[in-house]
Image 1 (spheres, helix red, strand yellow):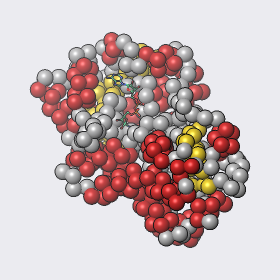
Image 2 (image 1 turned 180 degrees about the vertical axis):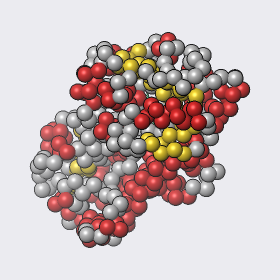
Image 3 (image 1 turned 120 degrees about the vertical axis):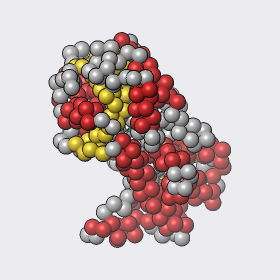
Image 4 (image 1 turned 90 degrees about the horizontal axis):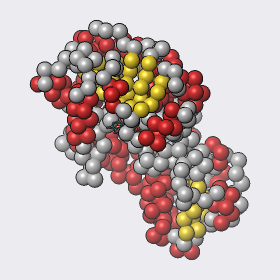
Length: 401
Ligand SMILES: NC(=O)c1ccc[n+]([C@@H]2O[C@H](COP(=O)([O-])OP(=O)(O)OC[C@H]3O[C@@H](n4cnc5c(N)ncnc54)[C@H](O)[C@@H]3O)[C@@H](O)[C@H]2O)c1
C-alpha cells in the first residue's frame, strides 16, 4: 500500500467536501485538491473565502489555501491523487426514489483517470448496495482501485469541530482498502469503527432516519398538545427535568435540510416501502408548516401580514436547501394578506430586513431560531407562533387569548 500524500475530493467545494478538505490539509499534513464543477465556489475558495457558513472554517482555510489546499474545476488532479474521496450523492427524485445514476456516471469519469492502487472513498450517504455495485463494476473492468465507503456523520455547521472528534466508520470489501481508508481517516479521527459496506450504508441511514423520527415524535406531541390548548413545553420540561431517560426528547420545530428526509426516504425505498415509521415521520415533519397555517385560520388570516423569522433549514445556518420555512412561505402566500420573510444569513433577494419585518407583521412565526433574534422586542399585540419555544414568554399566549 502506498503512502497517502495527495488527496482529491470530488464535490470538494460543498458542505461535506470543503470542511473535510480543510481539516485534511490543516491537521493531517496532506496535499488536498478540491475538484468541483461550480467555478464560482472554486474561485471563492481559492481567494480564501468560504462559500457558506461553517464554524471555525474561515480561519483554517486562510491558513492552508494556496499552500496545502487548492480548488479546481480541472479533473486532471485525479491523475496524480493517491486517494480520491467523492461526495457526489444519491438524491431522491420527484417520485421519492433514490437516483443512483449520478453516482455511477461520476465514478466512471473518475476511473478513467485514477491509477490502480489508488484509494477511492465513497463519502456521501448512498443507497444500500451502491458500494457493492461499484465494487463489482471495478472487478468487471479489472481495475485494482481500492474501494471504501466511509460515511460522513458531521452536523452541517459543526464539521470542523466534529471531524476530529467523531469516530470514523470505515468499510471495504478488501483488507487493503480498509487499511488504506483507515490510514487516511486515522490522521484526523480519534478512532475508527470497522463495518462491512452494507452495514456501514445502513449505519448512516439509520442515524439520519433515527434523528428524523425523533424530531417527528416531538412534532407530533407538539401538535397534539396544541390541539387541546395545552402548552407542549410545560409538559416537555416536566418530563425531561432531572429525568435521564427522556434526555433525547427533542424540542419541536422544523426538521428539514438536505439530508434527514432524503435519507429516510432512501431507507423507505430500500425496505420496499415497508418503513412505516419513516413515512409517518415524513408526514408529521412535513405537515408542521400546514399545522401552523391552520392555527392561524381562526385569526382572520386573509387580512394578516405574516412574518417568518429564519429561512435557513436550521438555526445558525445560511443553507436554505429543503428548508420548511420556504414551504411555510408558499402555504401562507395563498392564504395571508402578505408574507414577510427575514434571515440574516440566507442569500435571497426577496428577504426583508428584520426591523421592517417585525414592524409590519401582525403575526410572527419562528422558522429557524437564529441566536440573533434572542433579544428582539416583539410588541404585545402581535401574534407569535413559536414551535421551538424560542420566545418562551410568548408561547401561543396571543393565539389562544
Ligand atoms: N450536508 C451535510 O451535512 C451532510 C452530512 C453527511 C452526509 N452528507 C451527504 O453528502 C453528500 C453531499 O452533500 P453536500 O451537503 O456536501 O452537498 P453540496 O451541494 O453542498 O456539495 C456538493 C458539491 O459537489 C459539487 N458537484 C456535484 N457534482 C459534481 C461532479 N460530478 N464533479 C465535481 N463536483 C460536483 C457541487 O458543485 C457542490 O459543490 C450528500 O449525498 C449528502 O447526503 C451531507
